Length: 211
Image 1 (cartoon, helix red, strand yellow):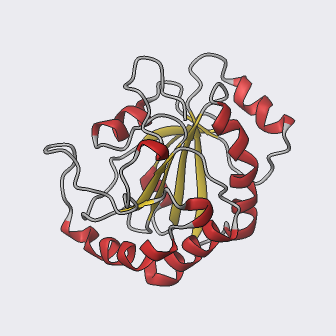
Image 2 (image 1 turned 30 degrees about the horizontal axis):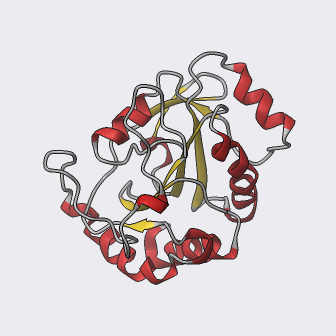
């Protein structure tokens, strides 16, 4: 996993402590607890046994946490926030073209969106390239990505907002968010998101009243 320039070194799954699939509490002051997100914590407990195989590094939430109001833009440049997706379970992925692991996992994210995307679930992949705005679009076209909607944040504000609440580890970073905007879990680093393991976890989240 690649760290963004000027940021702390990325935390990789290999550097995580044993049995770290359940998230520890964030540092004091890093995020406000939201009692309304308590159901997401209960859902995360039920999902914990499914964090295995291709997604063994996936970490489940143990505190009721609502993600910060991430701001980015769609393919036309129109502003978007996570609130625009309320009612859907989301897999939010931060990536960049200079991040080799990010590039490698994009086809799997595209297949996941093709398989499970719809009224109740969406993969929201947010590109963080800071210079050439057309480069990530050209890359996605080149590798045949056809199911993912294009979202971008050239100012990397989404990464900084997540880092401020203990979730900006480097790239790629991926978070599973329930339909109310509450965190179910996250993964620091790449994963095979089209695998049976990943689909089983997400389908279970959708069937657990989170979608």
